[in-house]
Amino acid sequence: MSTSNPKTDDSGEPLTRILACMAYDGTAYRGFASQDNLRTVAGDFADAFDKIASFKPNIVCAGRTDAGVHAVGQVIHFDIPTAIIERTTKLPFHSTTAISPLLNKWFRSLNKLLSPECMLYELDFAPTGFHARYSAIYRRYHYDINISTYLDPRLRKLCWHIDEALDIAEMETALGFIVGEHNFAAFCRRPPAMEKDSPIFRRVDFALCAVIETYGYKVLRLEIQANAFCHQMIRSLVGLLVAIGSRKLRSDFMKEKLLTGDRNGMPSLAPPHGLCLTEVGYPEELGGPRSLSRMI
Image 1: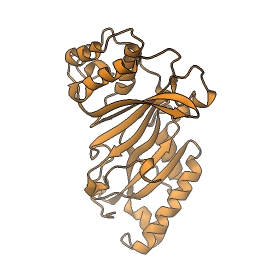
Image 2: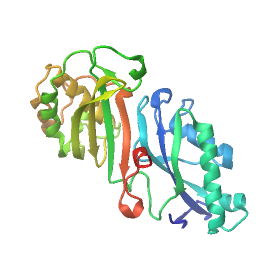
Image 3: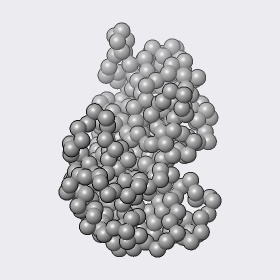
Image 4: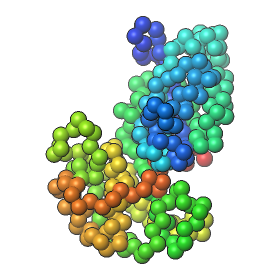
């Protein structure tokens, strides 16, 4: 990784960008982004880093997960004054003999403070030009639906339990409509400043569903990759897919919503606990795809 310092703070002091990859159980968090008086992933991380380096960073993430949503492929970056590194190591910043031990120490200390709900699996200096959000070329999520008769308590925080038969073939047909670039306005919670009828275009690379087995139970896993997702887009898509699979709506309803961008008649959102951010893709010169599965 490059250890260059591409930017400075308001006083002109050089900053160093650090990236981290993490996995977390979203159950106890009120989402990723820091919020006053609420426990969040970014808030916990900033507090932990403050304890080990006496500096509370502003965290930038690849995907802002909502309350209850999990991740095994979240990527973040933050900038710290280069002087902190030099003060801690008592060596010039570009001294490679000092950098690796410091990162290893921070890595171990952060995991001790963040566990068991959150764990890092990578901590490094960011390549020149890296930005956790804007450098990403895709995000990948999966959503798990327990389609077995019984609700196993072990899966209650990881899957949405549906105890009725789903027409998976019809759901697959509906999923096929979302691949490519479309207006997903009907599937997004709009920011307050956005005009009501503004289109929200996203490019979906692929959308698949398959029945897998977890702990001996049948789980319908929906996997979706796109260049980006708007707020609550996947949970909205899954809510509609389940309505289609339950034969409350036809698969053509998906196509209609993509064409009109109208939220009227949309079913309720799927609950958050079935959703997991699994991978974030970056150009090869910035390190390529990052996910926990690639580290195993």
